[in-house]
Length: 202
Length: 177
Image (cartoon, rainbow over the protein chains, first blue to last red):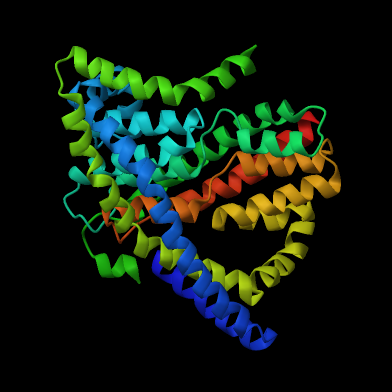
């Protein structure tokens, strides 16, 4: 899927550039985007290093598995493939908690940590597991309690009630998350894990 | 009241966690500094590992936008959307949101300014922005960090979630405001 979207975006860009005469803009965008992608990745290194270190302490102190055990019913329901007591369960909960609380600089490192734990359970390291897809469905839905960025933008623009969007945002996020997780579940049988990889790809 | 409590959580969560986790570690006889360094070593490796995935995704999206294809897509969708009750001004945001974080933030900020921060359309835009994530960035970073190449149904599931969230944002705001 990503193969086609990736190629499609660039191929369409080339065709439209030929019609619109925007080849120079496309060239500049390609170069600038590559540079900014590296800047983003390198920009993550500091905070990633900090949280991965702290997470290792939490792991060693038994906090991650404690969180996992406390929320076992939720994990078992969302991620039936994650065995009880595996650190992946706790790591996923911590990552989701960081997202819900809007701790943006902690959410990405904790999310990656959770993906690493899920990858440890994966038989074929090139292929996403069902648990990974569900975790991504929840994460890309942006589960967040307080839309801090937007409250800030509304307040800066002179809104009399910038926090009015909190309730609709929570409702919309919740509905979107349920839809994403349900879709992940429904599509699961159509994307088998290992067998006939070629037939799925094409 | 609830808002004050949530604000306090956002403000204090990080420093409290940074002290509380090592504190529990010390109580449980963990050599906290040694263990911290051991885990932190992975940080740079992860940052470097996601570079190829992020470059790939961001370059493709950057080219698509710069060529004018994004504008064409929005113009093409307009008549389709006009048949529904989804506001036409919000169509670009619905598409941009999943593709680019900075692009959708700029668009939303501009729309809030031009339509007035207390207008229903501004609140719909803010709710749409707040209720979703930059899907392709998240997928590239998370799958990139663990080296997963075949993402199976992750993209369709995430995009269905984005679409439903966008419609829900508009519907809930239309109902509330």
